Length: 307
Image (cartoon, rainbow, N blue to C red):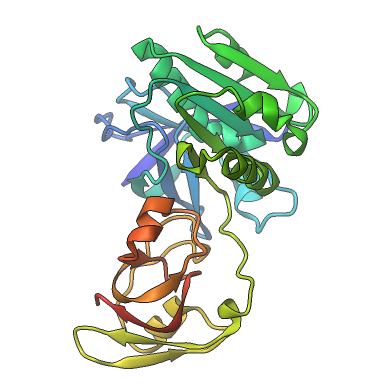
């Protein structure tokens, strides 16, 4: 669908929020906390931005964009070129970071990672459920939505010493319920390690901006992919992605980011030992072994795909 930019607001240093509406004034499809939009940025970049507006507002979608100084150009194009009245192609609304029921919600956000978290916080607050938020950044002027969050009824802790140096004992040790976290890789890795030590890995739900790097001996080995419908076997070289090999072999595959963050290319798996490197599937979904993201994930020896 095409959506029109109706408002652009400076929320913090290098962060703008963008409000989108239907050009015809129609209601927009409903969405749930943690969802994101897949947007074609000015016909040059396909990017994913978390929805961070009001769930009850069916006339608008809101996103926030950080100008990435070392990025690939998508955020800089938005900051430099996007204007009120412009039309954007929105491919879909998707949600790989779903808010599930819990007796208590412990939210952790680092920097621009607040964007999927804020809709969760506001929804839980509206329901009257108990929650707390630890929100970290380099300094307060870099952090979007601080005043909006502090106006809510829960416990909000603002940490201005940087997301990578959170005192994890204070964030996690006494945390009941579930922890939902989004932010820099270093912060999420540290949270995951701390949760593992505490025996509470199953109580941590994260969303990453980038998939984990492919490391280890198994990741460097070629493997075979079998197309179940035709029996065709495709050999995937060590330095080539399964997705690219499928496309080269003429398979019709949906894809978008090629980085393991959007979930567009997910395929079913009938058989095989998988090496997951995406930032989409939960630990429970990985353990099931019946799906993978071929843009970044691999297999050991041989995998049979439900294609």
